[in-house]
Image (spheres, rainbow, N blue to C red):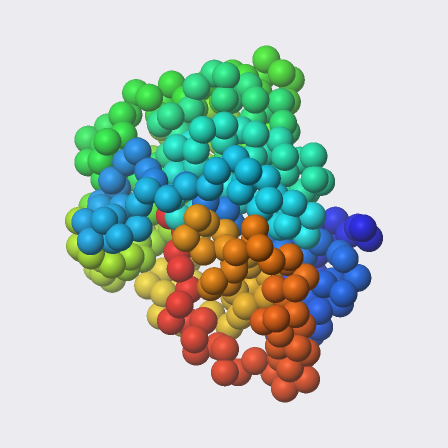
Length: 340
Ligand code: SF4
């Protein structure tokens, strides 16, 4: 397979403003066998927690969605189909990957298949030494850990079922195993979802967790994920506190060499994000036991190439290259999901 580095493609994506040109790039990559997809993979629809801002706290959603999982054989098939084309793989996107027995093996398979960037997105509560050693051994690139409070009571009340001490123990464990194996990987990313109750605590992220060698802090304003137990979803009144907190974090992250990713331009999600059109319609492959990329795709019975042909994937790309993608832009605004 022809190779181009993931970092270069991402830089190209930022430099190119035109969605038509981007769709043309995707079409070319698909025809030439260049990696271009971002695979978001949930091996199991389950979580050990019931976070108040998450659909796992919505009883109706829970009843209708939780419980399905891939078998190891199905997992192998998914890897055969999607990993050779993947530039990036995120394991655990809308669900908790450590609930899938043998989850470190997914990282190992992805690395064997040459996926340049592999990330595990987790609440970190179920990690243990054997798993962390396996992940470091497989050269996992990044581990993203959800942390929605910087003090015990807030953390444990927003992340129902999680234990504050276990979070600290497991952050220390990852950092210790990295040192023992003389590895800079996985990078540790903290993911903090901001609401009106935890917005003040957000500024303390580096003070509380900086000791564990945090590489990236990502701040996400709360998004509406349905009938969740946490219902106070309008951040408007907290914006001054939010902005002040980000400014403090900017200083502390700069001093520590930590990357800060924070939404300062549109924290209330009021603008139409036309940048995500190509990502959502051509680059993203969301794979879970409920849906393998597109509706009704059964990877045990149909090849990936046949699927692309049957669904007119390349024809659609060509149409968006030639005629533009205005019709997609409104839809994208309505359907963009927010990863927890
Ligand atoms: S936010 Fe993450 S950890 Fe919390 S319930 Fe949802 S999937 Fe589980």
